[in-house]
Image (cartoon, rainbow, N blue to C red):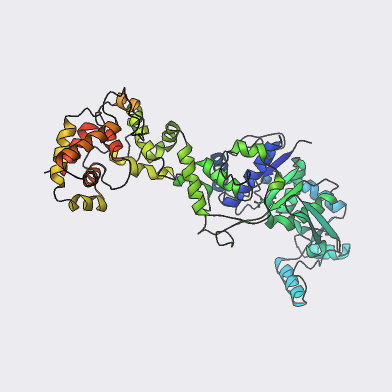
Length: 511
Ligand code: GLU
């Protein structure tokens, strides 16, 4: 039998972390077993289901790289993939269950159901539907109908029977079915409940394995019994522990985003989020935390999902995000960061100054975790007007009384030096020859201008000639060139900015 797994979200809110992890594990299991992965939309709660949520869920899955073989947009042989379009099918199954006596009509109003629960509770029993219409006579039924009451359909749960569920994650779990009530299969308006529609669809869609959160464990028992009542084989279930917050408590809004797409909007790379979510409950091997989706698929087995609650740790996520940025080839990184970079880099520069952009970004590749950090960091290289200085940079400039003289003298030197031309002049040759961040040990000999290493040698010589301590020189230069005291190596900065810009910025604070 071909393994078939599914993700079955209700479009009543965004795709959150737990949902994304469920999708990812089912996807990885299907791919690992050479089976199919389906997407089924459980939209029978008409009041709370929205198209907006659906779109956010689909987009969230696409962003993570979780693709589906059958489902919305892709179609398939087992459709429709929206439960709201499968109502006739549920009605057919309901009919069958009524015929075989596994289902019965319950005419109790919500108030009566609540009152029954309270009574049971007062008697020290488990509060649940009190089964008041489980065994009524045809006459009683006719009377209730004559009152104009609408019936819901309830499942006749076996009483006092212990059932075992051989869970792929939890092992064998036992429940006395008496603890589960005669649950509603179909509401008076003809809408199926989750457990009912889920069983019908898991069967009709040929689902073989179901990975989902452990909050569904009791539903698993209900579904198992219903499968049996229908004479059908149930899929294998794996009910996996919830994701916990750092403090070991239930994950809250303070721990993590509630919509996976917020990570996209904050500038995280999707591979990093994929990797981090996959790791929340499943280990690749030993202590290796980083793995790609392909590597995961090669090894993934449902039974290896951990049985302890995984803790969400935003610091670890940030570390992982930074690692993915560092490992992305620079050309690819620039392409992917372009929507953010365009906040400070003119869009035409992506055609005319691609090399410069790559060089500037490469200087910050080690220093950012998310793409949205880049525009502010690279802005200095593309600012053609007056550069704004942050408070630290202003302080550094004021600290050294004779800084203006050195800055002027250094500007004179650079004016006569063979530096690359400044943006927006053409500087393609220089940027192509010198790849940054530069290694001062390895000057690029055929560069058509000075390399960062040569700029450094020249600057050291300049400091020596003027009897200035090198350390005292670099801070005011950096502040006047980049407007900050942190950032890329100083001689990479000089190289990136080129002659005209360096000279103008140094003179601005010169004597
Ligand atoms: N619609 C259910 C949910 O979102 C699906 C649970 C299941 O996988 O059976 O929780």
